[in-house]
Structures are given as structure tokens and as C-alpha cells.
Image (cartoon, rainbow, N blue to C red; front, top):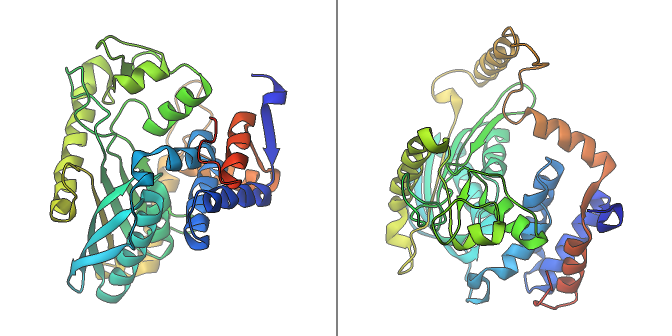
Length: 340
């Protein structure tokens, strides 16, 4: 890809472009802000495929053209809620559900919130960081639509089904976010859009044979993480996420298997918050001080590189593919057939 195929945007320009594209697609001001903030944060953390290109995925989803209704609570107690996502894009629905979890945890000390009727929630780390910065220990799980074959299978039966954790600490929170598939579904969609290959050993084509063609993989299946010998581990975790997602089955629309869980609680149920933060910081220091193998310059904590990249790109801006920029401009002009 030549330099002329890449476009540099300041953070303000990227935010304005994203919000204009979402307004052009029919979202109101508040939802456009939520959607753009989510994908822009992903771009700033170094995940281009989950950045501005993901806004194109929003309007490409078949569910985008179905009616939306406000996110609402179907049943609740002081510390629990079952939430109807209202067929809103998941980045909006999960944001609103995270707000519910934070409010309940702050009031009751503990919150467990399940949600259904949404799609494409984005980076789970985003929501766990929200809860951790509110001073809460958090867990977020996803049961997504089928795109991953079970261990030994050739057809999709499970979602990419990530699980994420957030922990308040001194300074930035500790956030750990991991998918259960060998390759990210959003990255697969991005590579299919721009015509790039995917790595070997992460997907099968529609014929059930290994492929590096992103479009063939989208018609086939991703594989669970762990490789040929250990894929049963990713498969097992994905199945566990499905079982947790089933807690939302009373709120699902017919044929939907998606389910999302948010757990948040105050550390001071067990220990003074400042002692907990200090303990997490000390554990991180101990881990980073571990003797390193040859050729290893630094032991990086999960999320550490994202924080550093975010700080740098906030000043430098981001770079995106010209095709993506042009498609977002078309969306901002009201053309849902954005051409990318």
C-alpha cells in the first residue's frame, strides 16, 4: 500500500468525521458521539481495524436497517438487571448497560447485569476500563453470533466470545481483554474490506480447508485459539461464554443466541480501596521485575502498550486507509451505499 493510500487525521478531525458519518447514517447526536468515541479510542490504542473502519460495519450489519428502541431494563433488583438492548448497535447498548452496572455497584456494592438484543459491541476492554476507572473490579463476557468452528469442526457454531477484566490500580487500571478465537472477527472484516490476507492457521474456507483469504474465511469459519493441539482450550472458554450469555435468553428475540454479562463490585467489600490499588500496583511491579529470557527487552503487562500508544497518538493523530476515509465521507453525506 503506497503512502498516498493513507490519510493522516488529527484526533479532532477523526472525531468530527466519525460523528458526521454516524449522523449521516441516521444516529442522533448522543449515539453518534458514543459510537465514535468507542472506535476512536480503539484507533488511539493501536487497533486500526477496530477504529474508524468499524463505523462502516455498523451500517453494513443487516440489523442496522431493523427498527431500534431505547435500551431498557426488563427486570431488576438492587444489584441485578436484565437489559433489552433494543436492537441498538452494541457499542451503544453496552455503553448504556455499563452505566447501569456502575450505578448499581456504586449504590449496592455489587452489580450483575445481563443484556441481549444487540450486536457488535466492540472492544470489551473499553467497558471494563469504564468500570475500573469508576473504582470497580469488573468482568465482561460476550456470547456472539456464530463465526468460529468448535475444536475439530468445520462450520461456525460459536462466536469469537471474548472475556475481559478490569482492576482499579494506582495510575491506569489493569485491563485484560482476550477473545476465544484464533483471530479477531473485526480484523477479519477489515481485511476483507481492504483485500488483505489473514495469517495461516486461524481460519477455514467454506470448503472446510485452511485459508488465508479473508473473504473465504468470512464464508467459512474462524478457529478457536490454541492452534491444532490446544484449540480445545479456546473452544472450552467460548462454550463457557455461551453458557453465561444464556442468562439473557429471556430477553432475546427469536433465533438470537447473543448474550452479554457485566459484573462490577467495589473492592471495599473486602479491603480498603487504596490498599487494593496498592496491592495491584505491587503485583505489577513484581511481574515486570521478573528475570527475562534472552532477547526480551521488557515484560509488558496487558494493556500497557495500549495506554502508551493512546498517549502518543492523542498528540500525533491517527492514520487510516484512504478508502475508509472516502467511505465515511459518503456516509456523512447520507449515502448508506458507502462504496467500501
